[in-house]
Image 1 (cartoon, rainbow, N blue to C red):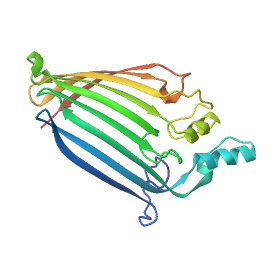
Image 2 (spheres, rainbow, N blue to C red):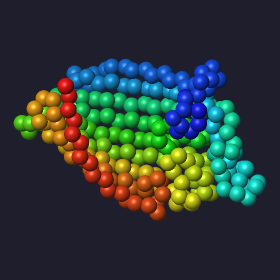
Image 3 (cartoon, rainbow, N blue to C red):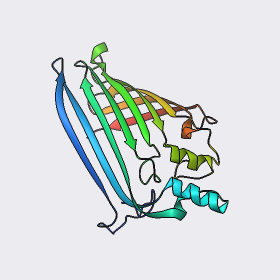
Image 4 (cartoon, one colour):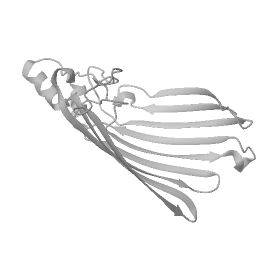
Length: 217
């Protein structure tokens, strides 16, 4: 685990601070086509600050909450479930739900406490372009009540913090088209629209455009 939230330095006290992950994968079939269901649980034992502790300390002292000042060794738990299905020979789809307890600061990855995602991938064989692919996905991300209160009171995370918060779930739609240039090279054009970026209704929407070249040897 990192020695501190989103830090590069790793914590060498492996027996005191660590992460546990367990995942179950079950293959099945829908109308004769392959599919898979997955369930994951995790627990991180880390030196982290709790949002409610930071909010209480700030209320008592009259300042701005800061999770770094209330860090102690505690656990962060979460789970995720999802399924991936071949709708046809050229079309695949997925749906995924994620949750963590939202009590403590985000320690790794990005600041999401609740997540619902779904999408589809279509192969270009449907229109005579065997090496092309088209994809579309949608996401809805949210924060726990304690996390919202912390940000609304002026607290900062390693990605989030506006000094105040007019909360709204972060909603994202993303799509791309990948042009296959032979079997080993592809060029992809992408577009992403984010509603309420950073969970703040005073921000956005944001429109992002992408260009990616992918090569395999």
